[in-house]
Amino acid sequence: LLKDCVITCPYLEYENRPLVLKLQTKHGVDHYLEACSREERDEWAADITAAVNQLKTTDGEKTRNDTDPAERRNINLGKVLDSMYDVHSGIKLSNLVEQGCTYSNCFSGSAVVDWLVFMQLVLTRVEAVTLASALLEEGFLRAVGLKSAE
Image (cartoon, rainbow, N blue to C red; front, top):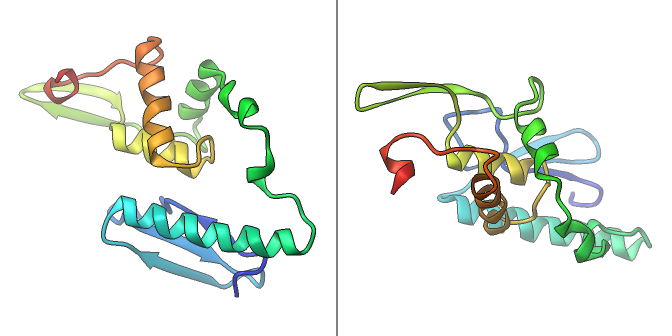
C-alpha cells in the first residue's frame, strides 16, 4: 500500500478540516486520515513519509532527504512571497475584522505555516514558523490586528 504512494499534508481542500492528510496510492486510491492536532497530523505524515522513503531507498532511488542541508538554507524570501500570492497555488486571501477595523487581503499565521509545509518549502512546522518569522522580520510581510502585535 505505501510503496510509491503520495502524501499531501496538510490537505487543504477542506478549509474547515485542517487536521486531514491525504494518502494516495500508486493506483490512484485516496485515503484520508484526520488527526486530533496539527502536531499529530504532521507526525503521522512524517512517519508515513519515512516509511515510503525507506521503501524507495531499498529500490535504489534517491530520496528528498539526501539533499545537502546547506542547499535548503538558501531560500529566496522574495520568491517565497511571490509564490504565497500566486493565484493558483498561493494562500487564499480573506478579510479580517478585528475590533471594528477591516483588513483586506489577509491570511493567518497558521495558514502560512500550513502552506509552507504543503508546498514542501520546509519539512516541519517548526521550520515553517522560522521561515514565516524571517518573512516578517525582513519586512516581506506585516502583522495586523491586536493579536499580531502581541
